[in-house]
Length: 104
Picture 1 (cartoon, helix red, strand yellow):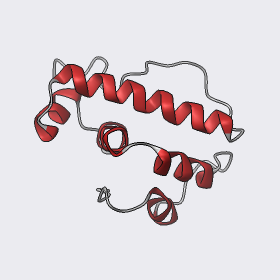
Picture 2: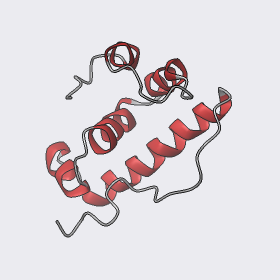
Picture 3: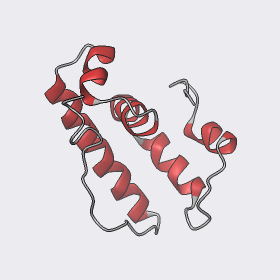
Picture 4: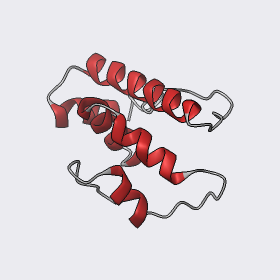
């Protein structure tokens, strides 16, 4: 599902009811809305839409290093906001949405 960036995370959350009942979707929507547009863009395109870092760099006309940095910082900012709202993070996994996908 492609989500227009001008659509708020709360509107997206209402349409895409989560399949995981233990996740507070309102907290996730609020945390997404609090991100900068740069961070929200790379997070939604890279994690939600599944674009690879190279694709994101082309789409956004940015160097791949900038995309990877923004993605990392966006995930960290989202994680911090979710922890502050009382959600506990899962065990650590690879933090880069594009890890291991650069060769494809």
